[in-house]
Structures are given as structure tokens and as C-alpha cells.
Length: 268
Image (cartoon, rainbow, N blue to C red; front, side, top):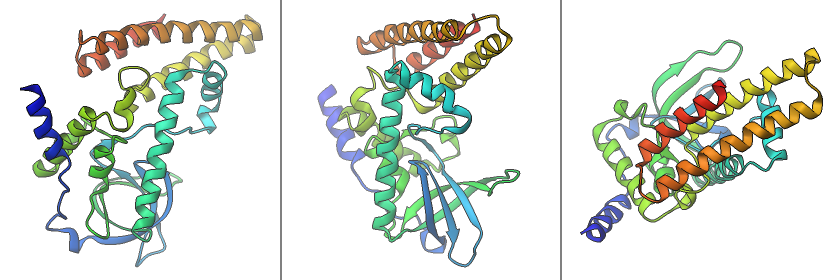
């Protein structure tokens, strides 16, 4: 029975979404820069104003950010943290795939804007459904190929027919272990969980950085403290990954448990 259900899901998950009824009325934009697999900068064909578009309904693996995150990224590279390696590796693959799709469409896309965020000193960021000129729904492709996850915190805002196809595409990608699903039970954690972990690490580095600056610890002790915390973090994740792999917990429970355990770790 499980095999039959998987077969049905696979066939349904591979169905391509037809363009929505409002496709022809959508504004066309030129893509100027792909930042990562779910964000790019565009310019409307009748305007010079650049706009950042964050793909709605999905979340994709992170790419290295640098700037304010350079210290934490550098420390994780130094200690060869596989969680970072996996996240950034799939983030780059997703970014490259989006670039490929955009180029296939002549760097022209259509966007249905579903929301907007004003950002002081920066170009406005909008949230939207993104389509290639042939009607291909980009979010669906990325989920189907295992390069994006459905962003469950916001999927309730998604039209029912689109949500169903995204759910089927994600189930198909998981069953057939495409993209991130190849290592979902070993080293990859969801983008939202990764960002939360990265923020905790960043705050921890700032705390021990103040100790270093104040002279209460040495550079060597600073390094040891971070390495020790990283080791504890990886032990926690390894244990919870094993529970997921052995079927002792579900994917949602896995994420809840990781969040709880990591909150406790970095609260110490």
C-alpha cells in the first residue's frame, strides 16, 4: 500500500502547473541580480526603479552572507561544521538553478506581488509569485527539484490550488530524495532552523567576544569556548538526526526538538 501511495504522489508531484488565469495581466520585469534561490532584484520594463523580490510560499537553503555574519561563518568554516557546509552547498546549487531558469527566460519574468516591505536606505522588498515568460511557476520548480522547502509559516496565504501542487511536489521530491532530501536525515537542516541556529551562534560569539575584549579570557580560551559549544551543538543534532532516521520522531517533531535543545544549549 505504501508503494502504491508513493507512486501516486510521485506522478501527481511531477505534474506541471498551468499558468494562472491572471498570468497575462502580470507585469514583466528584467532580472538584474540573483541573490540566492528565493531572492532576486528586478526592474520593471516601464521603470528604472530596482526592486528586491522575495519568493513567497517557499524557503531555500542559505548562502554565505558575510558582513555582519562573517565572524560566525569564518568560525564554522574553521571547525568544518558540516551543518554550514551542507546549507551553503545546497544554497549555491539553488541559486545557480534559479539563475539558469531566469536566463532560459531571457532574464524576463512576471511577478504577482503579494506583499511589500519598506526598508530604510534600501530598495523596497516585495513578496511574490514568480513566473517565467512561458508560464512556468518558479517556486513549484524549485520545490519539485528539492531545492526549496514549503515555508509553512506562510503557506496559509497561498491559493488552495497552488498550495496543493506545492505539497505534492514536495512529497515527490522527498520520496525520490531529490536535492536537499538526499541528506535530510544526516546533515541538512531547514533554512529557518539554520537561521535560528546561526543567530544563536552569533550572539554567543558576541558574548565571549566581549569577554575577550575585556581581558577576562585569552584568544585561545575564546577559541576553545566556541569549539566546545560547537561540539555540544553537533552532538545534539546528531542524536536528533538519528531519532529521525530511525523513525522515532517525525520531521515536524525533529524541528521542534532541535529548536528546544539548541535554545537550552545557548541559554547556558
